[in-house]
Image (cartoon, rainbow, N blue to C red):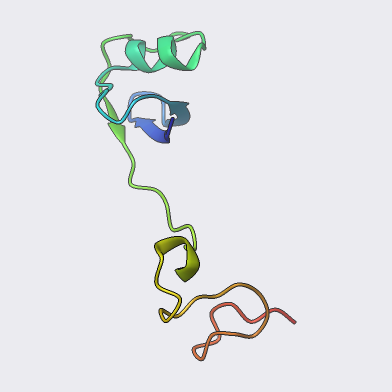
Length: 85
């Protein structure tokens, strides 16, 4: 199951939860229920927003195209983005 980060403006908290891709959370109360945390003093009806997260490196071999560039380890990127000293 994928994990998602949600932010609540009412309390400035970010909470990570796992749920189905088809599921959507809209309120602090829903988020706390899924995360298994106490809502505290924040209004359970306070809206939450799902944050855009990610950026994991995907290897070309995972995509089935060994000709595509990939950074596995070491100084393999021409732009120096994955240089390991």
